[in-house]
Length: 69
Image (cartoon, rainbow, N blue to C red; front, side):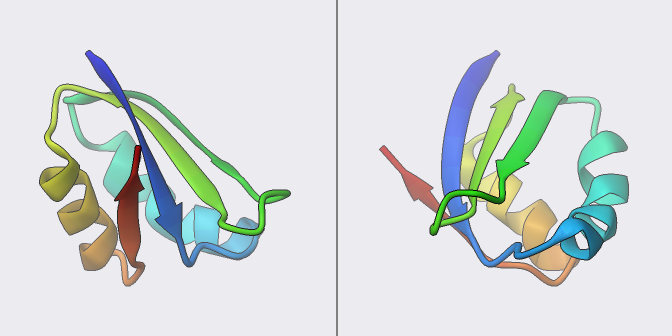
């Protein structure tokens, strides 16, 4: 598992509720969370996926993500 971080447009608890089914249903995502206190709304994901696969899951949920180093 690798820990990836993304800048997102997830803004609130409702947004988190919208992405939860997509991220929780994926077998390659061990753990995830969004820092709503951060101006960049940082999503941290422990996963076996590539960054592109994680951004694809978020896009299906209607959100954008950009990997950060």
